[in-house]
Image (tube, rainbow, N blue to C red; front, top):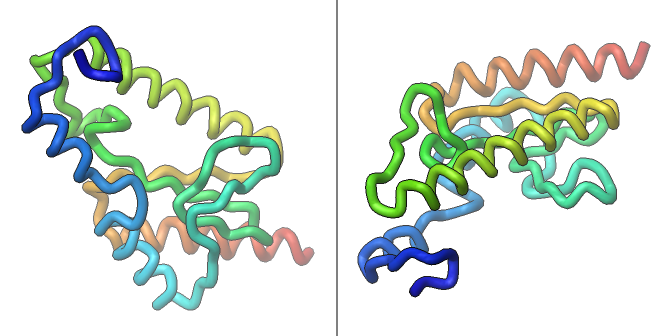
Length: 145
């Protein structure tokens, strides 16, 4: 049995899943490059709020904006998520737990005065960067006022 549950995992599946990057994905890097080209400076892979054990992919500290780049499979994208047939109950529980954690993260950040922005891996990088940039600039201007 695998270490993750009561279901057997094939060596091929285990190998494929272990190669999935959890940080510095192609989408993340493209988004960071686009934001940098727009003149933004930010931190990567940081916890926005002390005591909250959740790490944002991109953090704009002074503006209090946390960006999360969510994979369609792992976070259950409404457009592209697929539900595996093997170990279906395990994967459904895993993905739904990820969605609950994401919602809880967004709630806790909002309560702490942060804006949480979620970007799906399939989104157009330039459009996502523009959307993020608008929020960051708006929040920076209200911080100074």
